[in-house]
Image 1: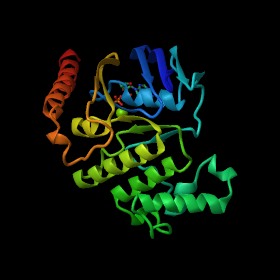
Image 2: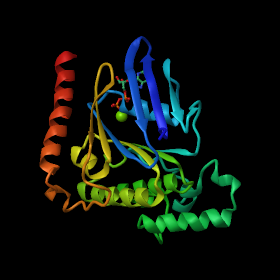
Image 3: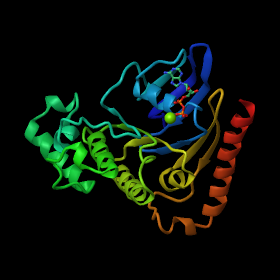
Image 4: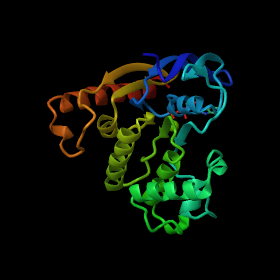
Length: 257
Ligand code: ADP
Ligand code: MG
């Protein structure tokens, strides 16, 4: 089976500073991959490359075996900040998009209303961003990202700014949407619990230069319950293993810089 998205021998420099060093990564269709690593190791840079926001100096990025040259609505992105347009209401924020503008407005609005209902925002279509909490705004961003039916979703610490309770709800929501739509997901976080609940496979990075140094395929299956996952026979061991590796990388970076 060929990979859905693929980074082949990617090296990237900002000025003469090597940020990514020979990254090789295959992600398969419908896979949920989580990227963990110390701050500054290049996680966001990898997502930005996959989104097509910029090009590496060395190596090639492939999506469906075609080289990625520029952004495309088939590859959506969700950031830590919801980045809503303050002058548009919730419905118009969700339906704002280059691909959607070509479609029948009634149809797009109907689908947007369905997504808003899914994320628990039915009845808020006419509200403006300033009338919403942080968690609600991020749910709008989630609905907006899913609406065009992307093949790939790139998520850059999307729940990092939310309180613990809201974050858990968002994680469940994201998993449900992923299971239903079979989208390929690459999700960046520094939260090990979040990684263990969400991922099929966790990748651990090291910094300066950014490299992928470890990979753990999780044995939890795809039907997971956030409350009972910790009771899985391998959970404690895996959490310990991933935590140690992430902490080791973070410390190594602190003592070497
Ligand atoms: P992470 O998301 O893992 O915290 P980033 O991908 O944002 O890390 O950044 C990786 C490294 O590249 C950091 O050292 C950062 O300072 C540097 N960097 C990121 N973007 C730029 C840029 N546009 N210009 C120069 N340096 C950058
Ligand atoms: Mg980042």
